[in-house]
Length: 223
Ligand code: B16
Ligand code: MG
Image (cartoon, rainbow, N blue to C red; front, side, top):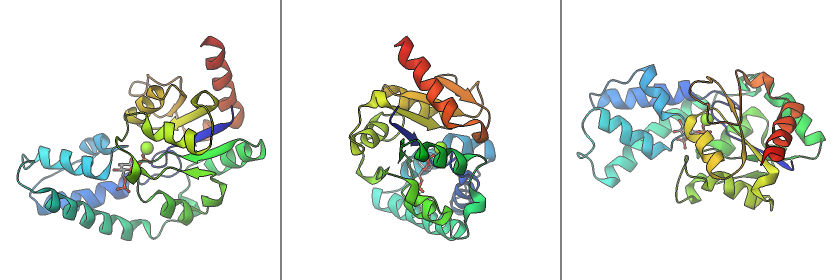
């Protein structure tokens, strides 16, 4: 194992609540109500795909031009950015700073494979950006999660074969993306939702360098 590729939202920090508040306010202006349960579907997918789902819920999917949709998405992002401006290292999820440093001390490369275009901004706010060897720019991808491209791109940017990497995710679409890239996958969250992963743990503080390496070894032996 030469690298570990991390998802951001739901693994390194929890921005889902802020995304939800910003989308909820935008949806309300259009007369669409969204709840927490609906928000689950927005995890891991891109900004524009999230907007499409919200418009579909309000049966407004054919009411806006592409330029108008871009404007709605940009407005949501401006609201979201005001919310995440306050983030700091206290917003790092349990055990994450420890495991990043542990992996780093073992000379394992670290990559960010997040659908969020705010990824570098958030990593700076959390004080973690210097630990990362590479960050995939999601704006350059032709297909988001569950397509394998984002995890393949992270491996490519590190000049490593996918077999030397482990991907870590909290969303079903993200686990599918890792698996589609033929990488070892570790998921954090509900086993029922994330059963496609090679290993599922309940909380980020169960992610240790030893556990990640063990999952990689076990999977490499069986393949
Ligand atoms: P932005 P991840 C994803 O991040 C979020 O889970 C998802 O809800 C969001 O729509 C997406 O980033 C895009 O975010 O609007 O900031 O570009 O889980 O892939 O780290
Ligand atoms: Mg996520």
